[in-house]
Image (cartoon, rainbow, N blue to C red):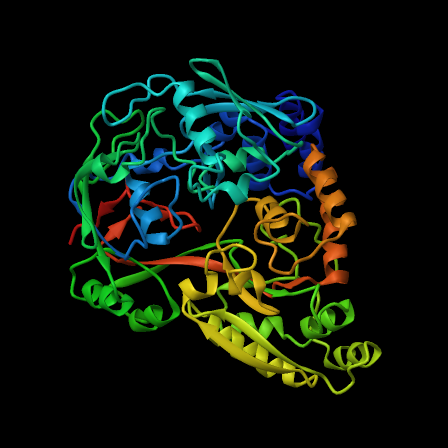
Length: 547
């Protein structure tokens, strides 16, 4: 088929919104993979699947059998899909729990318990068709009642849901409605063209549970996934076996064994000893396996980032010139190459990672400029710089990043004192007034991957955002968020995004100097390990290399 004939065929698939993306593909502005990802976003799931997206076609040829052995950290509390937040618990949930949609880092939105979805003309009402005949592990069939109850639970302020901040201003109690047994509608608080991401694995709490779920998940791990519980031992680990009644391709491995570790170094020792097949990755652990052909580092580019918030309502950061000056001291390319070993891409002080198709690439990239930083400080009345305390968490590479910021800031005369706290102390109660994260004058916070910038834009920077550590309150920004949510096609989204990016560069309520890759370490003896950049560990297609 010629390119012209292909374009003509694509135009017949849907309406005007789709055809705007086709136009961008025809002119070479949009890559084919991004076009297919956009097809899935607006509900053309059958077309996306027909073009080779997804995993199952190549995986079916793999040899079944065996046990996959996994090392994870300790869950921070009881494993409950509604309240879970830590990577270890998300990794465990991945074996048994499923979402309406999987946000795959390679292929974008993939149908799981939802077969298709579409929005009305306002993008304020979204309708999802459910996959028929799916059963929970206890044998009951999944219906719209279960789906609606799952989301009503997540948006209920009294449920203890960890997803409240994600849905704030987007979906409220009563917004999920049963149309029929296999159809669910969502009436949103405001228009949102990216809403399918909100019911996907991007919101890791959005696992579909039975309508009568009572918060006792650890008793039976009752989900719909490719594995079902064999045994669970708090603080020790869990084992899962292949689910013979799974709605899709049956899992290749017979079993999954997960062991919890208090110390990350113990995980790599167990991997090296042949006792584990897959473990999480950190810079320190990567050094331990570097150059060893018995192990491999698996990575996906993500929108994960460590945001530096600047309290816009407290001196010295009430003046945006001071905020911009600090941002200008950072050499982003050096940070990517040094701190992150090249496994990241430079950020531009907005949540719009370059991997988001809606990001406007024409917005100029901020670069290190010490002379301009000094000029701005002088103009703001602090020509000799100032002293400030940076408060952050002792986690991942963040303490090292804090030292790097401290050293770069000195070049402009800014004297940063470091206050590095244990992770639980840094987050405190995670509410304004009792959390160093949300109350500190200057801080660094890690944010995990999302498939769309919406959650970052709303939760961290909107005037009423639950994670707004910068205390940034800007009516123009809030209005632009509404415009971005209403934008129905990629061109319109990109125009709205460009305005947001430009405003945030001018105001600089936070500094985002990089977007990280997300990695796992695996034995060279296993193939088919998949994962999302938000800690899901997908093991149903794993096979073992024969010696």
